[in-house]
Structures are given as C-alpha cells and as structure tokens.
Picture 1 (cartoon, protein in one colour):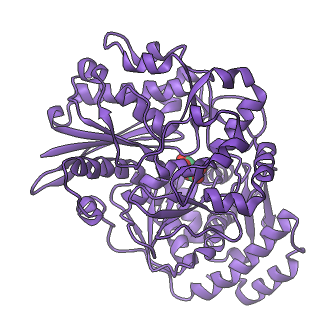
Picture 2 (picture 1 turned 90 degrees about the vertical axis):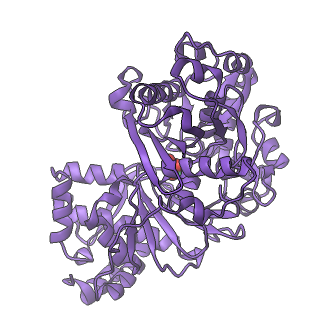
Picture 3 (picture 1 turned 60 degrees about the vertical axis):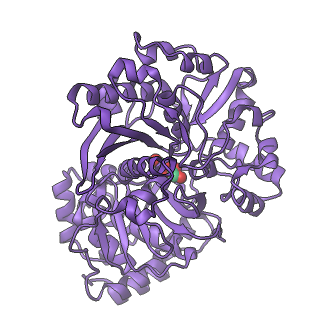
Length: 544
Ligand code: XUL
C-alpha cells in the first residue's frame, strides 16, 4: 500500500487530496480545503486577493500560502486520515503565472528550517516583495508592448514562448517589478512561481520549475523546454541568475525537509516538482491524448486539451504549455468565470438553486438576448476596460434572462475561441466547482454539441498533483507506468453523460456567429450587430 499527497494552491483556497494505491484498492482517502478569506482572515483577502485600489493590479500573500500549507499538514498530522508512514511522495499544483520574490537569505532559511518554530515566523524577512502578483493582474500592458517590440512582434513571441506577451504572465510582471523597484529587483536572489515555491517549502531547497508552468512566463523556449535567452534579455537584466532551473514535472526535488518530519511526524517522502493548476488538471481529468477537451469552471474558466506538437493559435489568444505528462497542451483562459456567475446570481437575488431554476425556465438562445460578461478585465479576448455589454434588448433588471445570458456567453465564447484547435469535440470532461451544476453543463453540451461528463473527483488539479506524485515515485523506483494505469480507478467520469438536447445544434451554431459579431462590435473591430441579431431572432427567437 502507498499513499500519495497532492496540494492545490489556488486563487481562493488550498486543497489537499491523498490517494491510496494498493493491490486491490484505489481510493481517495483524504480531501480538505482551507479558504483563504475565511480561514486566514488576518491577511484580509477577498476571494484570495489582497485589498488594493490600483486598477488592474491583483496580488496575494506568499506568507499566507505558506501558513495554509503548514496548517493543512498540521491537520493531516492531527487527524491521521491514513497511516502517515505509508506516505511515499507529495506533489502540488499552483495557480499559474503568480510569482514569489526571495532574497539571498531565503536559501539558508529554507535549508535550516527549525522544527520548533512555525514556518511563517521563519520566512519573515526572506521576501523582496511582500505581495505576489497573481494571474488576475492585468496591469502590465506597457511591459508586454516593450517585450513584444524587443522580440520582433507578437507572432515571434508566440512562436518562441507559446503565447503572445500576456499581462498576467510572469515575464511582463518581472519586468514591471524591475522598472518600478530596481533596488528590490536587485536584492532578489530567486523568483519562484507559486508552484515551485510550494515545492521549495516542502523540500527546504529551491525547487525547479516544470515546463507546464514554465510556459506561462513568456520566458521559456517552448520547443526546447529551456529558458529563452532573448526573452530573458527582453524582460530584465541578469534574469537568468534569478530563475530556478527548468526540469521535468516528474523530477524528485528531495525528501520532505526534516522540519515536516520532526514537527508533524511525516516520513521522508519524496517531494516531486509541482506544476501549474491547468497542467495538473490535464492529468486529473485523464486526458493523455489529442482529441478530447476539458472545461474547468473555476475562478477562471479554462478549456484545455493535449497536443502532440506545439501548434499555436493563429488568432494569438490561446496559450500553449508543456504537458506534465510529456508533449504539449493548449489552453484558453477566461477571467470572468465563477465571479461573473456569482455577480449575476447576486444581482438577480438568487441562490444557486434559483440560478439553476432560471436556466431551466428560460429558452435556449434566450430569445436573442446576449451578454458579454466582462465584469473584470477579460483575458479571452483581451479586454482591459471592464464592462458587461448587453445586446438584443437584454434588460439589466431581468434576473433570469441575465442568468441564461451569462452562462450562454461563457459557453459560446469557449466554443468560438477554441475553433483553431481543430478538435472535433467527441466528449467534454467538466471539472471545477461549477461543474456540480447540471443546468450549466446542459448549456455546455448544447452549445458544443457534444456529451459532457463530470468527474467523480471535482478538484482535478489537486487530484492530478497526487497522481503525478504517484507517477514520479514509480519512475524513481525504475518503473515507467503508462498514464492510463496511473489514472485508472481515480479519474472516473460520472454516468450517464449529459447529452445535447435534440434540435439545439442549429440554434447554437447560428448563435456563435451572432456572439462573434457582438464581440467584434464591443471590441471596436466590427459593425453594429443589430442586423445579425434580428436575423437570429427571426429564425430562433422563441426556440427552446
Ligand atoms: C491560466 C490562468 C488561470 C490560473 C488560475 O492561464 O491564468 O487558469 O491558472 O488558477
């Protein structure tokens, strides 16, 4: 019997999942989440983000993440949900792009962590930046332009790094730090991602960055999986000295530091490199091959799928990352995910049951009423001036119609912006918190014209991290198991699938055109969509 532990340091919470792998039994034996706002009120976060009034800036606290990790391991040590001595390996997943800035003392502090004192107390004084920029930050448009210019244009950046220079990506964030606080940058010895920071805390040494999360920085040569010297030069001086090495996601960083062994009674389990939440989710939904896609409905909504070769999106909106299972993955990220759904729900004064009822009781196609739910600056497409747009006579006060409009918009946008992948979607695997809502999944199935399967373990990023720990531990023992064997028994889609309702395909195909027209209009690149909307209403106005 062996136990593997996965963490997910996400935007709003830290989750841990432990899995048991035995000859005849495979089971999740522990799953727990700590919510930053509720469980760590001293940091004053809202939805995991520190307070602040600079537009487009979003930051969180690396100390809070460390405290959450320690509290979670303390809970495991106290509750003993499994035989601690059987813990073989630990890995993790982190919200992507976020970065942690450590000074020259940090390496010594990590190596010499004292089991008599709390982790957070010892980490004080090791950061050159108290607040970490996170993926919700859109404040680096200027730095993106500078990097793009230095590297010879958007297409060149996308070809080299897998994505155009992107506001939330770590490279532009590092450049902004260097421009605004050159002395702070100079004092910085190491810049970690949330993922490699988590692994470093567990191993007590600087952990590498894996090509899955490394590709979210605009600093990695995607095809070669190595730092791209030109991108580093375009970002900040002497950056190569400040980045951890890149290493495969199955790299063993070392054993759990003595700190965790003595303070929490844990064994010297292997610490496996962490990766980003989307790359980990790819493993946690069991997508090892090209041709299937997963949609994760979380703080951000994402659509991702595995790819054998690193093709890039001609419209330059999608990102390509390394897959932690080898190969590549394409990803589209929509910032207005669960927070937009919550916003509309709250405005309509509904609970989630009421939200579902509104979806059931409103007609598919919403009678031609559409929304572009850009309540926050949006990533896909790039929108820096947040504003929700309403078309086709959608009244702001019509709660149920707005509920349908926000969900249809999210699903239409996912469909429209993923066309370039050229995947004939046979099946969608749905994960993330909002995947618990069958009415939302029905709209997903209808818009994409494909069956949707939900997974039994909802937090696929965290499960993926635990599965990666298992995979890497086996490799370290000299056994190379196929991914299908690693995931068997854990990545189980629920039955039955949610199937597209008959007759909806034509309606949503037409609506995709209308949605694209509204989007172009709102972005200032297309004409007024009134004619397209009128034609749609004529054909499908009252369909349901
Ligand atoms: C992906 C992205 C988000 C974060 C959220 O590019 O920015 O999905 O990883 O956790």
